[in-house]
Amino acid sequence: MYAKRELMNDDALVFVEESVKISAEADNPWHILIVDDDEGIHTVTKLALDSVVINNRPLSFTSVYSAGEAKELLATRQDFCLVFLDVVMEHDQAGLEVVEYIRQVLENHMIRVIIRTGEPGAAPERMIIDNYDINDYKEKTELNVTRLYTSVRSSLLQYEQISNLYDYQYDLESVIEEKVKEMQVQEAALFESSKHAQMGELLSMIAHQWRQPLSRIGAVISQMQLGISLETMKTEEMTGLLGTAEDYVQNLSKIIKDFQNLYFPEENKNYLAVNSMIENSINLLADSLSEQGTKVDLNLNLEKVPELNIELKQVFMNIIKNAFDQIVKKQVTDGTIDIRVFNDEKSLYVEVEDNAGAEGDVLDQSLFEPYVSNAEEKHGKGLGLYVCKMIVEKHCKGKISVKPGTAGACFTVVLPLNDSESKTDIFV
Image (cartoon, rainbow, N blue to C red):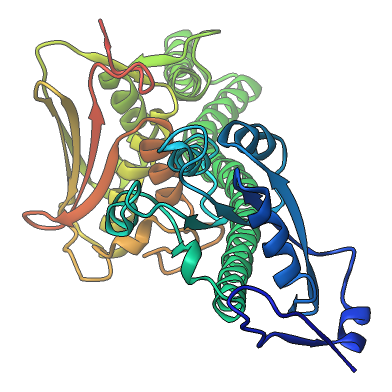
């Protein structure tokens, strides 16, 4: 059995099986708004499309008779898929104002808009298509049942496709947002883990530097104990040994003080002079540098000395130690580390260059990625330069890079001056 309608120019080409109509999702219809000041148009439109089912969904119609009513309704309801819109109602441009309201005020670009006009001279088709975001333009006299059905079907299917795209975009944005949050948490955890690993390496290095003075103090004590027990040590000799022990103790105290200045500055002090950061780093490496015969040349070419974000202390320590590690690895007997600090009007530059050669892998920018190392044995390494990159680029808004130097690798840190976030706008 078929339900049949014959309307509008006696064109009756739309047939819908009753069994299909019964099974349609009545609780999920296509909501269509009819905006026209001619009540007959509302009646004819509803009768012509009453039995139409598209994608197993029936049509649901809502009628308003002026542009003002349409705006009020559209402001409160967001479920309309399609609007049949007359142009000439309260005035000659009333319908076009509704289009502008939908697209510009409500910013609704999903809803399909079909202009139907009985006075095409008042709103020429080309002018409307060129200047308004509509989806179809029909003169009322040309709309028969078939054309009306075709226009509705294509518009609703377009709406469905656009709606699916919006849903997909929203889901994708949600997934991306969630993944970004997960990555930020993981990155923060990795950063903290990296800082702890670097602190452990530094403490191990300090322990190594302590062994020599401690062993010498132990030797002095043993020598004094032996002399006292044999009653052969003179006062002058004991005084000299005590002076030697005191020198070693002073050396140990200096190491601790440099470590404290670098990693535990004065309370509430969030920035430190760049020269102090670098000098403290060199001092902490002094014994190891001396044992290897490595020379460090610090060249400060600054009119004023900027105070930097305290986190940068770890950057300079890591870069200098990395240069020293390369010298040790290559067994360079006359190793040198040149440190150059200078600035222009906008930026501060710190360059650290070694003379250990510069193979391609040493200069690979992937060295700044986590778990990448040019050391032969990692033992928790591969995080130092990653920490440097995080501190310089994310915390201090600067840049860090590596390039070939004169006889080795040259690491460059560029920091913005007059930047409150990087704390480089303060001079001492």
